[in-house]
Amino acid sequence: MPASLKLAPHLTEEEIADCVQSANDPVEMRRWLALLLKIRGKRHSEIAVVLERHPSWVTHLIHLYNEHGPKRMA
Image (tube, rainbow, N blue to C red; front, side, top):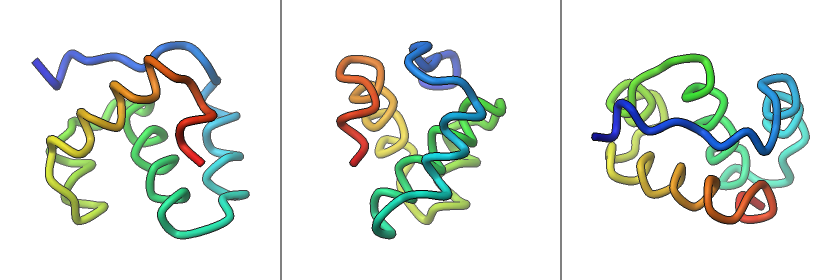
């Protein structure tokens, strides 16, 4: 179930927040922001509304991050 999907501990919340701030383009920033919202306890549906995406996009992004780590977000 997507709501129970957790982020792999590749980066801390602070490091993800830094990535949001230093993102080179809007797409990269949106990805990092989704992860930041997730690590702060937001549900996939909430993240999707904020970022104007479908909840399945959030789930897919988290799977990519968990499997491939931060390098996949850029």
